[in-house]
Length: 261
Image (cartoon, rainbow, N blue to C red; front, side, top):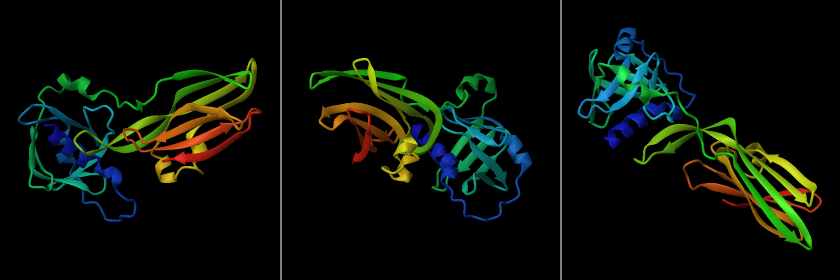
């Protein structure tokens, strides 16, 4: 069943990968067919809810997956500009779809969609990091220093095509973070700054940066140069990260360099 749901998710989310250069004219939409498709659709064998068609959009029970636009023309269900299913059978309560791999997905409409209202809660944007505060005390050359880190989720959205447990691609949306660092020598503040992802655009490739989250910042060491802290920018759900090193001198000057990726 997970494979079947993954197949639906992959094809319905495929419109997100479509280029903007196509000028092909759309076929005329069948308003009557779209009206018949409105409702909650379940797998014919298991009665598991797969998606809901409402208005012009497809919604998933998985509240972390983005809705997709759809239309019906002739015997084809279109998602976006090019993703499509061939409609093998279609009535008010029956929908058979071919995904182009000689597999027919057989669905039936839920007779009481109110039973599934909780399945389609409002789309949730994921926060990878809750508010995190870290406090590090350092003694160097007879002086006592204190570093305060605060990782705060923002409302800045990062859209990302990720691979689920079935190896299929879906689109999710995440909130990025702002990381604050303050450094004190005793009661004297020698450094205070908010770090945001755009500040790293000269260190990290733009293609990676747009899909990444400012994930974390940690203390590394203290030497004659100053305080070494490392920021990580990572793709959500992926081990792919860039690590950028910051050195804050004892008089509060900041230098930055790429450490690894």
